[in-house]
Image (tube, rainbow, N blue to C red):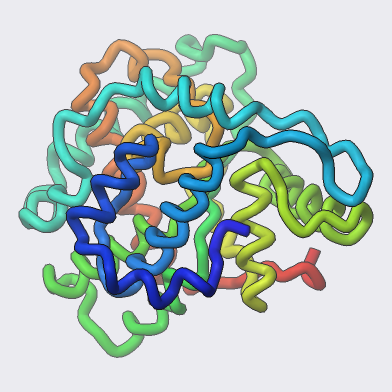
Length: 296
């Protein structure tokens, strides 16, 4: 499993720098290592070390598992992903985003205006029924949204911590229509209940298993509703790039469309940062709802 409780005691033996370096050496780019995330990264390191010794193979419970993209192919995909020109964590720690939203807003408005013009739709499908969504780990958020009921979230010291927690909790970014996000959960439930799987080669499914095993539910946050398909694809790509695919369970990068495809990398990343910032505020305002097996 992704998290093993027997590594809890060992977490104190790693310095933050050593833990980060070990994860990086095994192809995983960790976010901020703080009290709420340290044990998760220690356990992730243990998982990566086990995987480095043996490749995935075989099946569980005598049943052949669906053909997921191999881990090796995912790692190759990650290797070609360029390193960001700026660190996402610096955006708020330097008060950049909290003090001057104008450059970020202008980028989003530029993209929204482009996609809002039917003449710029590459698929000739102007139906605005797409959206993007995020899967969050409640073991990291710890119902963070409730804190905003009694606190002023505009204060930098609050938003910085909330931002850091929110970013660390995201483990999947997707786009779709109708009930697309729930297909992932239905797949996980089918593998668990119908086929008896306790573990999975697919990192996203395994993360869902782990959350359920801890008697929690996956937080599915829908964001940026009622947009055309090209716009949803672009928002998905921007958020994946801003977060860094190494910290997600996505198996591939997103696909930019239209004018945003020709933007400089820094502009694409800033768009992603701002979209995530808006998603954070959406989460803080609406709160979290967890989806357990009985809810699906």
